[in-house]
Image (cartoon, rainbow, N blue to C red; front, top):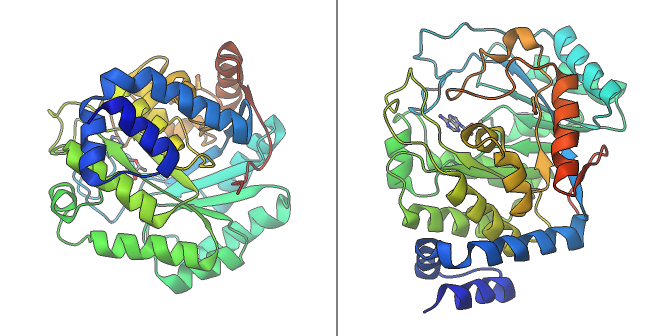
Length: 346
Ligand code: 5AD
Ligand code: FES
């Protein structure tokens, strides 16, 4: 078996066996450039040099969960908690709209304060004010009925990372109150309702093996989502994983290339975590096959409090500054920000 042959096979058949994925990951150094070239070419064929910005509004850092890796987990008493009002959320969107954003992501911890009625009202208000914009939600696990009500209120897309596709590994990262089976069910529910769905995982999370990553790729193959968000794990000082090593940009970008090759039409962000682990991480992510960026639109006042991991970039910058910074960064690598809804293309 040769890594190069496996890459060719992936290109043709769009999947590999678990053992083949593990081998390819083990021998990635031999093929990383070739994989990135293939991935970038496929991306160009489907989306050209466009990179789609999504304006991210991190509207609450309260969370009822206790994922071991996450800085805003319920048990962390050192977090200054905040909630944005409907008016603050709408004014963050307005700020983004003026800059040119046509795609908004509302993301928060699992915060019961925002009842389904409150969320439906917020989504419906954004939908009414910005009929030309895509609305993406990232609110964690809900039930079918609630997901459906939010969809009917005008949400188009939903992001919910599965985090790791193997039960054993999931148990090492989450308390017993959480379940991988339920998370997977949520993802299938979301697809069934009609959302464009994004899942994803952390690269280099504690106890992760290459076999785990192969399982993640196979789960993604099976779910067949429209978007996949992956970024390196980065330790947070107030978690039990504070002394663990961070994931690498090198493995993250290789996985981005594999995902692009497996599903050429994917919407694939170069994440903020990737930009945090390497100064040119987001550029590397785009050059390896990514085509989405998710700059922050939250009020600068609260940004540093949405710290899932340490040293997160852009917590002091205004939305307009990130906008300018990212446009320049993309132009330098021969791409451009495209201010449309940036829908999934078949
Ligand atoms: N490092 C990197 N990513 C993290 N996330 C949560 N905590 C961390 C961390 N310490 C990711 C999870 C979650 C997403 C919103 O952020 O994958 O789904
Ligand atoms: Fe925020 Fe560069 S993207 S400062």
